[in-house]
Picture 1 (cartoon, helix red, strand yellow):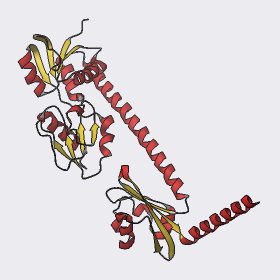
Picture 2: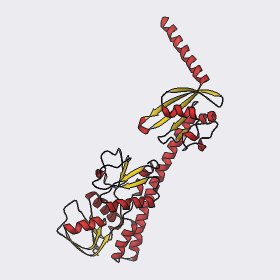
Picture 3: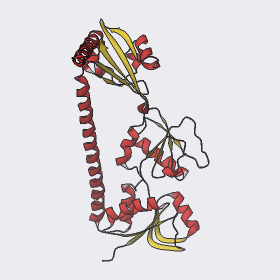
Picture 4: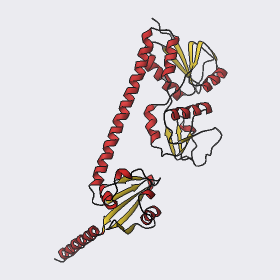
Length: 330
């Protein structure tokens, strides 16, 4: 039996490829798909049973370039590639982020989709063609249109071309009135792909947790107290030795602002960066604090070594130097 046909019209070659591959993977057994992109040359005339557009803007532009006729025309609803969402979760909370897409309605659609998915720890601002400067913006996000991002923005995150959502796929399949089991099989394929994706994310998360636990175990074996602070002045590392020095549990301070944990004098030394080390007393224990910055992460690491231990290390170093001098004389 000859398969019914569908014509996909997308805005760009990249979008055409992603959407064609999705349709072919999910429904290629049941329908024959051909695809065109506006940034390529459209035929003077396009005719098919169903015309499926990637967006309303694409539909409008295509109508000015080709005579398009079909028994039915759909504008597909697009969703977010879930395997790229983890890239957005690395953005610090409260950040203002520029969302860049090839037209304003699609840009708003992406923003709304992300908010609906719960990506609401940042504020997304829509990109507008012709406006090249956006105040206090350091990160841009784009679904496959990164070439449109203003060049001065230092960090650009590509979340990939958005695929059609399952409702669009089922709507198209229902139109062809195929066997009742077909829509069910296509839905199962879609769900299987999502399960495979979530399994991949879960494995990645487990690997990340294991790596984090490994490094935490390593720093917990160190005799020195270790404190790390990110650019938002939040504590990201607080090892066992520092728990003993400050008589505070790491679980109670990780993620908290340093001002809620460290007293003013020590906090001033840590944040100002005018000195590399400082003598301090922590709950009756005399220690020397050594400060080091990590410019690429805008982070600060401070180690706290007891004065007695530092004194013993100095004495040991002096003894070794004395032995070497005697050995050279002999």
